[in-house]
Length: 292
Image (cartoon, rainbow, N blue to C red; front, top):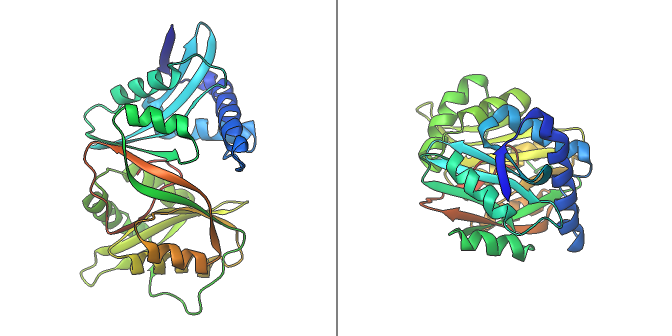
């Protein structure tokens, strides 16, 4: 019998081992670098999500053995899932049981969203059977060294007093209530804003400068050109740094601008959605927190 329960701090080591082993096996089998290079990095993610979304952190057990782990991110009418992993060799049904519990945690949310690695046919089949459909291709972009633009883009640094306008704009364009995410990102990173004449915003982009690389996103803008300018702003602010983006294939001009800034496609992902979804004019998806 598979039992799924809320994750506690005492479960972190087991959960981290599952993430490290499961993602390591799938990614290496297909020639990609796993997202968790060490168990410590997976443990950091578990602790961070326990702080941010404690009700959405769940662990599956068979008897006393931990066999799966998953994270849900309820954001009002929208909820997102990720990451989710079953221990290699776990019995059938673990991932489905985890998804059922996350659906319960989502409560009144009507739009359920997740990223699926396109090279993983097993997870694609599971999510398709659960009613998820592909609504966008989300390339995972890497840059060894960002190339600065020839001239500075016409955007400005995001300020603390911009957060209410960011929240209003994001809710209007994306549908999710990401106030907690933006507070975390503003406190641990930086961003750029594209202001309008009336004091509101027509675009924003967050980024976090970590020791190993710059994590760029999330961001939303009124046009692909505006989003491309926001990417230019990050490259101009941190030239020569390694960076990562989860982009959207629905805006080819944004991809081309990212390529000009030194990015390349590492692998493809799918945005899969169950329920209503109206994409914004242009966006970069969130890598952390993994909420859309």
